[in-house]
Length: 219
Image 1 (cartoon, helix red, strand yellow):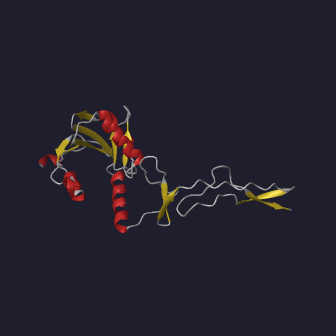
Image 2 (spheres, rainbow, N blue to C red; image 1 turned 180 degrees about the vertical axis):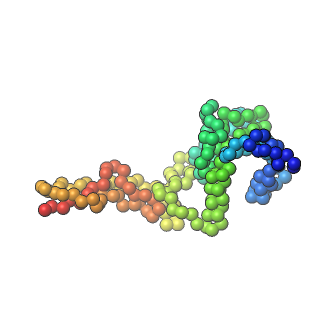
Image 3 (cartoon, rainbow, N blue to C red; image 1 turned 90 degrees about the horizontal axis):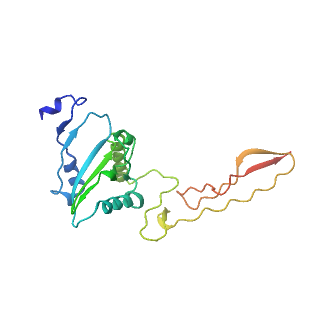
């Protein structure tokens, strides 16, 4: 509309957004169930999405927040979803976040089946991070992460890591070899020999029990 031409640095401007349509294209199950609008505010970075949700059954605010918190900690989406409960946070606190969204738990409103959730996100760096994730998925490639991320496991099942195309229980770090006593007048070099061998490709094997041992050269 014409009001989009007004000064964004001095005004709040009601406008349209294509976010709802974009979500329906990515998740066809939500087609026709999602609408949205937007208000431009005079801040250089960080946006907020206010989600008005209609649930299948009644839920309390604590139930909704606890579910989202658990998803942010233990699900496969934990690299994209974050959760915070702080009465002090403002928009600038989320500059540089790579998450797709950070749920502000203190702002959640739940009334029977109706829930309102407030979600912060960095619309510059955070958006760019999501674009990179999409490109990695399309290319079927992802930079190696060290140490490897442990996939979320339900219940009390052991955590596992990807290894050689298979999945297996995450091994414990191997113990460091005991250092040999240095002889008299030994002059150590800087070449480490005490690092633990990595348990499998993609998992860091740095020794955590003791510092790396060094070679000793005797004159």
